[in-house]
Length: 429
Image (cartoon, rainbow, N blue to C red):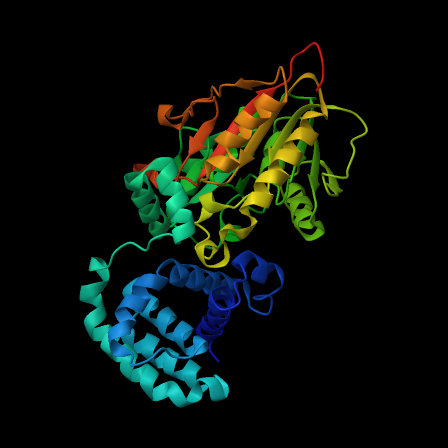
């Protein structure tokens, strides 16, 4: 099997893992789904899976007229992948059809008998698809999520978010030394007003200049704002709660803070330590459940990136609509409140805490912070004041509300909510 076919076969496994097994891509990758591949093949397989999942509904619309009945799951994934390769990625139809037929024949009893059908269907797609593809509607979010977002932000905003999800996400970097202009010039990127660097072209991240030297790390521009809002000072004791994989911990350490990074996942914390080592930064790492752990001394500042629905990251994680549902949302909101209450008790008098979630849902953001202020007398909100903030990001209660449809002319943002809280100086909580 060629390297390309190895990547395609691995991509098919990822796709069916999402659509049939409801396994998030991140979970499949953490379990070693691509471990046997070379780095270039891993990158290609992941890209093919992401692109196919992003355009799954459009691929089905193209395929439907050419299928008399729904094919088996493995075969459906193969047809979807080949359709997206031809119509979205612009791959040569002859090569894609040939590879798909070969994969069908090599797939054993489940698919080998369908090789002729794969050949016929994909040839029709190659003939009719190019004219149809640009006219297809933007895929809609799942009903449970779309309804909630429509109630919160309105139909026009939700349609713009769905368009942003389809467009995907550029690659954002955080410079270790804070000099976005210099890093952008070095890598041929764009320095964003908030201090991140955005690259339009995607490739093997580890091959980019400065990666091995630890001059920067990958971090969405929205996520990078949380640590900047916290404004860590040199020598301050700062806790990064739910810290892995470490982008925010590295920001805090690079600012000169004495960082404790805590996360419940040992494998994710191992990745955090690797990232710190690559970038020449130091932090105490703790693997523990924040609901059980007790610090040995209070902190000057805490960053709580709480577990959430991750609905703000769909533009870079198109698998999420297939694996998420509303069943666990109530429990997540309750967990966020418990973590927030517990973390506030670990601050020195006058200390500050940034609460953030990569969610588009107000119950995991604005409502969560308003409820915390009601529960804790004297707890205040510090309105963020940073260079580059767009006025439309400021939310009424004093936080920041970032959405994928914002900064559309710059390539968009992940959905994020960020609020800075402070305790009164005369007493703890």
